[in-house]
Length: 127
Length: 326
Image 1 (tube, chains in turn purple, orange):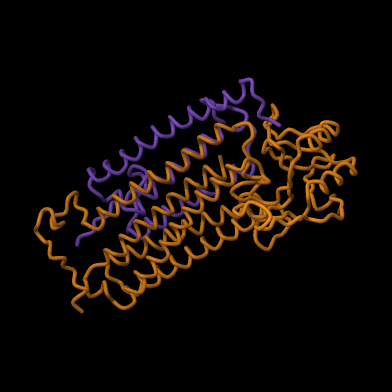
Image 2 (cartoon, rainbow over the protein chains, first blue to last red; image 1 turned 120 degrees about the horizontal axis):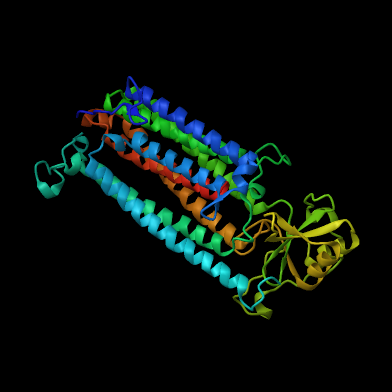
């Protein structure tokens, strides 16, 4: 069995000599992201918690984007998605991305609506 | 051994998996099928968590105040550190797993054995940490009073520091009527007794003038609302109903019970995945040790269990974000 590994990450800007060095490189990258996340979670910088973008704190957007970056590198390099045929890659990724986005969108809108109902109706819930 | 040959008798048959659609073998393809469906299951759970959180957005517990414990550091509030440690353990076990896969491609049995071994150790540490976190969460730390409407009231002193109910409760000698099956409805069991009764906490609260009540609702600054002494007394006396210590599926001293429900369900389901991952890893580990894959001429089984293991890590990345960070 031939196992061809694509050894470049960050769109080809960082090339590794062997698959093993690439694994360690990705590990270092994932660790850095996790450290940033934990540090932000402990410090909670004010300019990130005060500012809101699309009804959500900027800090939470940062967390979600960093999570997606981590998910990308776990899937692409640890699960060897980078080396699979593009058909398999698209079948797995787009199915998930489309269905999950739809589910989250619809459930969060519904949850927010029920919150408004609880808040603005004539029945007292805080007792 | 005949059972360890690589052939499955389906070579060259289109629908027997002999051809490799998308250049992925039958086993790998099926593992991807499973991973996609399992990813949808997990996103269903996390989206449901988001739904409930948005529904009670003004009263949802802050994870930083719930998970503040680190083993052997009793009483030192250290939010996030332990979960961060667990995250690193899982990422690192992913690294050893992918190194095992790489060594498998090169048919290096010794290396595969060692890397699989480290992966299993990492998984075991992770599951153990999760069990410890569950135990701490179930035990609780300060205790709270639940109102008739199921809302949580926590106690602060006038400096704004949390006070455990054990610190101010007055012992009232009282006899407790134990519910027994023959003098009541047989299917109603005796409820779990808390250390202190509501009456005792109330008496202790009224006797200590420096105590205030904090509700689970947020004020305009996003902090839980702290009531004045008069409001606190009125709240405890009029609305208080029972004492809550720790968290279970019905009551949660940290805030809304749904928070505890989702915590148990999502981290439990994920922990179950890690547990089965460790089991499958152990099976594959012993197969590597006795040389099954060496004879088969392919370490693809390591690759397949590796896919599953990385998926578990992937899910944890999301659980970590949505339960502990956001």
